[in-house]
Length: 265
Ligand SMILES: C[S@@+](CC[C@H](N)C(=O)[O-])C[C@H]1O[C@@H](n2cnc3c(N)ncnc32)[C@H](O)[C@@H]1O
Image 1 (cartoon, helix red, strand yellow):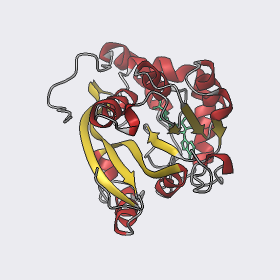
Image 2 (image 1 turned 180 degrees about the vertical axis):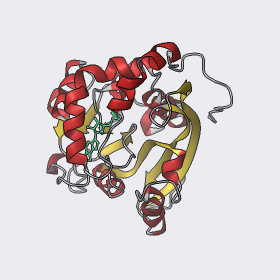
Image 3 (image 1 turned 135 degrees about the vertical axis):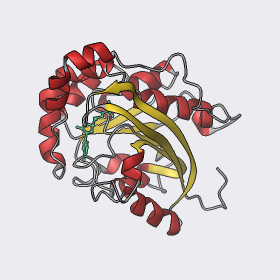
Image 4 (image 1 turned 60 degrees about the vertical axis):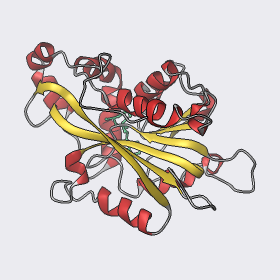
């Protein structure tokens, strides 16, 4: 199924522009991330864990909505697709307070794990009951080693995730571009890698040195994964809070990990 993002879906979260404009200072202060160091940002998120959901509800934060829409309509709707099964294994990289887990659970998925660098964000995610309790891990992606129990192991039947998703983590000071190799490590062969990203982070002229595009190309050229599709949407539709949260073009990118056999998407 093709998803047309020309028509705005009726159920897409939309910002409460009046509220956000009145509280602009709070959003500007929240947006003060360290552009280099994920461990400093983990502390920043610890202090925002209790406020994060309310602020993002009001801002019409829609990355989890779009990732879920794409996994369900673009992949899961295909007959016999591995992601059409409610029990398929999903891993949410940078799960934060679990907003993506909530959307995935609403869509019927029941087997969701998560990883995040902020213990306080994880505590909120855990309280929502969307992730399996023993399957939320506290670690910094690209810095800490992944626990061996989540790394794909060809010798163990059933090992590896069917999809790894990352919502709003491809930002300066958040996930380094080595995250894609880390995501591939937990995927089974033929598993899907999906992430949301602002268009400016996919452009070497505006990505503040993150070089996400270069790393993705490197992995495709090396035959580690193939590009499947990109679905465009607008973040913070209609919102204008200056350089922090304002309407921005973004997309959900889909890649597929290599299999032993020739691949189709
Ligand atoms: C903007 S929030 C997005 C949270 C969630 N995915 C969502 O859509 O609401 C970014 C999240 O990424 C986490 N994070 C940032 N850099 C990280 C890293 N290197 N490793 C693990 N988590 C990281 C933060 O702790 C935070 O929870």
